[in-house]
Amino acid sequence: MITVRTTDYHTAGEPFRIVREGLPPVPGDTLAERFATAVGAGGAPTSPRRGPLDDVRRLLVREPRGHAGMYGGFVVPPDDEGAHLGVLFWHKDGYSTACGHGTMALGAWAVEEGIVAAPADGAVQVRVDVPSGRVTATVHRENGRTTGVTFRNVPARITARAVPVATRAGTVEVDLVHAGACYASVSAARLGLSVDRAALPRLIAAGREIRAALAGHPGSRHPGRPLLSGVYGVILHEDLADTSEGPAQRNVTVFADGQFDRSPCGSGTSARLALLADEGRLAPGRLLRHESVAGTVFTGRVASVTDEGTVTDITGTAHRTGEHRFVLGPHDDLPEGFLP
Image (cartoon, rainbow, N blue to C red):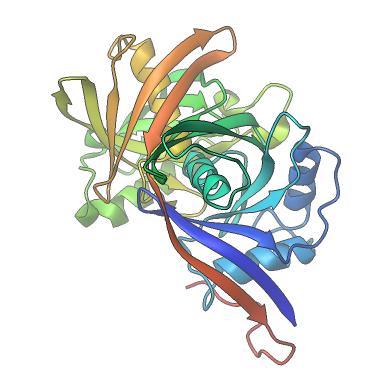
């Protein structure tokens, strides 16, 4: 009998399943080494290798215990005492190097579980080691309740501008940004699309097409860290009417093999902030109102610009949706689960 306990959240609509109990040992002295172990044990759909850790991922992301849109994280030790916890992010096709919405959920969870002491009124930082580096979730509290979480990402670096990509809708120009993971950003209007639920099948198809076309592009390579290379997600965005505080956009981020983010995408918002600031569309002190295809909202700002890139803060809400004790019995006739 395999037993796994999880606490589930959603951040602006995107699920995040936090796994604290039931994990096998994850070899490695650092988060980066543990991530390499996870990827080597089945991080790609075609990987011939498997291990106990990836068995847990498949159990939780496949039906009947999960679904193709499920996202989650394995809580592991941090690199040192400077962080409160470490996490390995996963989805239906393997593992990812960054996850802003997951970091927000982890911040809320760490405070609500008492792992990090927090005031009834005010804010506290939860420091998290992730495969792309150390990030923070500042948890905002009022009257003993979490009211929001601000995610500070690793610096975002623009690595390519106006890359021509041939698609079935014509050639479009795509920008590439490393913001914990590599994101390709493209205007949905250039593809003849609007960002709404009715267009989701076509948006997903376009995202998959663009991601495949950019495989191996020099701008997708991370210097010195091969596991962070390759386009992770494609952000299809459109402009909305500016607010009194700054620009507004709506987006859908397509990642893995056709998954889409129900939230405005935390790390993807970081990428958009870097691009808008570079274009002169987001002045210091101004805010981006970033809306998802589900109608939920993150707000983002540029905190600073350093030699390493653009440091960003993204604020949203994270809500607990349930606590689970998943089991896999020895006589279960569908131990692998399935994906439609």
